[in-house]
Image 1 (cartoon, rainbow, N blue to C red):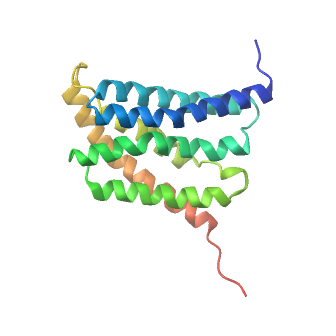
Image 2: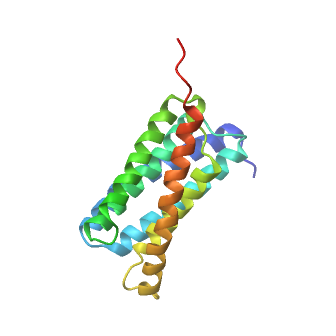
Amino acid sequence: MKLKASKARQLANFITLSRAVIGLPVVLALSWGEISIAWILILIGGISDFIDGWLARMAGGGSDWGARLDPLADKILLAAPLVWLASKSILPIWAIWVIFTRELLVTGWRSDAPQGGPASRAGKAKTIMQFSSILMLLWPPNFLLHSELSKLGWWMFWPYLFLAVSSGTSYLKSQSKPYRQ
């Protein structure tokens, strides 16, 4: 059964909105020490990010609303795990500050951009690295290979941080124009 473009866009938008809503249960799960639940919710969020993008491409492009909401949904979902990881001294707080600063700057730029400012390849790679790193850092203690995958997540965090800074710089450079009177 083939979805009509408008239905595919509506479904993509619904999935994106659902990802944003998952952010609250992630916060609650982390605050209650339910790492496995938080991990599963973040995994669902990561999969939903792929699916809503696929649906939007299938529809010939997403809606302006979806293009603006998609990166915001990722930020809502992933802010709590980053803060939690810093609060447990797993990640340095300065690195989280750099990431949040980048996200605020790029989100501000995208809010004024036509069609929500499409994501660059570096921005998409950053998101994949972000989800992967966080999932490995939060790998539940009762899952196999906990220690090894947590370490791998820590090592993956640094290329993710580099991609965040470099893609953020690229976004901002692409929009900076010299002042003219």
